[in-house]
Image (cartoon, rainbow, N blue to C red; front, side, top):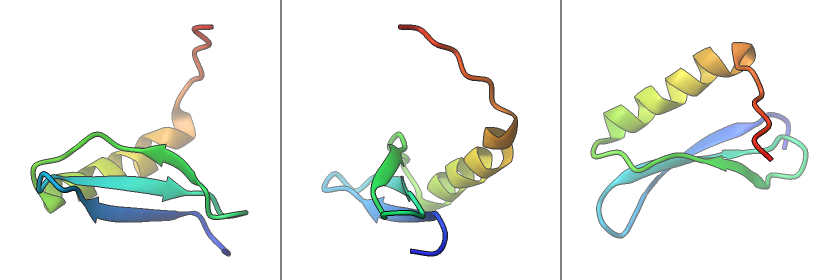
Length: 61
């Protein structure tokens, strides 16, 4: 797999969510909340793309 990839899926309850797969081995590294529409799910992907590069890490362990 050359690049990380977002996959949009539809759950058995009819809601949409996305998985983010790693570029190195294709494993799922993040799963979103459930969205009522595919458009809202795409908006969630856009938010991750926009906000992740500047996100802080908070260690709550």
